[in-house]
Length: 595
Image (cartoon, rainbow, N blue to C red; front, top):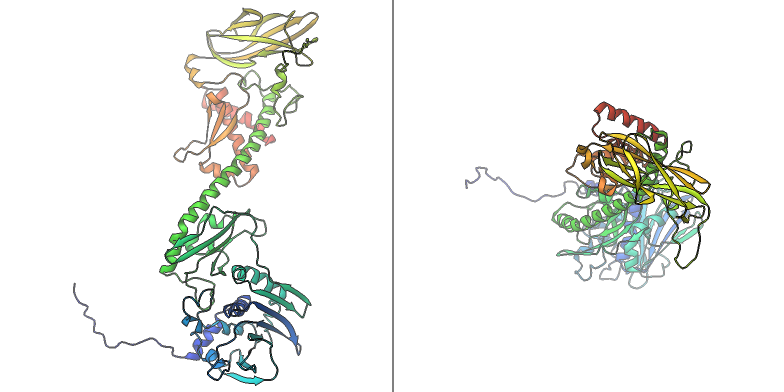
């Protein structure tokens, strides 16, 4: 390999050209005022505090904010004095960086810049704590100033911890830093840290005279316990996810945190997680990763290094599991919608068939009396005839119940198709008004009303054999029933087909078909009829199916159009393209007003 011909003239180390300018840039990098308050609270938790008080008050007409804790306080000098000087002169060099791994457990600070966040809050910061012998000292910094001052002050804060006072607050921040907003932010931002540490955080708003205790926010929805924590070589990624539902005013999100502190409220904002599951609105909760590296300035984003890449790889199985849940949920919702849409569509077609030419549309056993489309007596809740009323009641044999006077006669089958020249058996049943079958004293006169063919009695008085004509036709058979002085007529309608159409498999008297969804990614078809099951299959992966789901009404109309297409193809096989389209328009005209 050829050596480089470049001559190195000098080597050196990068350094800050203007330290004060660098400090200014760091201090101004925190633009989220609530996050700046959160940094002070986290410093208290890192110091082992078990109780933190946040006080909002007015002094001399100006608003100030105090954060008081009972933690371990500041590091002291050899003389036992709080080492304020180290804090002020070691920006970007936090003492927490030098803690042993066991000591760092539960500690977040590592950059030594959180204190400078007060620039975004107010004009001055005062930090107060005690020395080893109980004397009280304070350090004062001013926003935008290079200097700091340390002084002994009278009195005592009464504990070993630290009190931080920021004030006066800027006019742009004092209306943001209300007790209510601080409460809500900390309850979400420090949710897991509060739970893990057991710290009590209380807010005393002396301006509004409202006090509150920060309670960790709980997620809404059903906990997905099957989604477990994920162990990696760098640490365990903790998973707490819930199944919820999108809301009109707010889309549920999954947050990302490090050691219990929120880093990003919506993990879907990262390009690596630009996936539908994170933006679906069906998941909420939190993912906690202890080994990711945060951006130092704002600590609300992640450094895209090897650690982040390993985190992304570890998340892939979880993302796949979430997608499987989302797919299952979508299938369940689609099936639920399909049941309702199927009822609506079948009701619309039951009504439409009463208005369409009965001699043409003979395929479906739907009895809607003329003049009462879709609303005949004895119909089911979905608008279809209640077929159970056309069958004899199941009367136990040990009950000696005798039939009453005849009330109605039914013919079976009522609608059917057959091949020209073939034969098919027909039968009459007579029932009284209690739905008990009458079997004695019945005589039937069979006749062909139109369409050709012959009909004659077969085996019993109530049976006949119809032989289809030699040519395709739409035929009708009448059965005039007499029982004593009672008379009635029943009709059966037949479509006679040529032999080449026998494979169409049109079912006999099955009623209007339902539909079911079939996922055929490679298929370009939208719908198809399955004769053996009397069902219409609809391709749920077709782009038009997906596009129609923009609303329930649009989806219902799409299914209705496919339904109309299949009914026309069934009723008019082998006709010209023009005739098929004319019939389709005819059916759509009658049904779309119902859909």
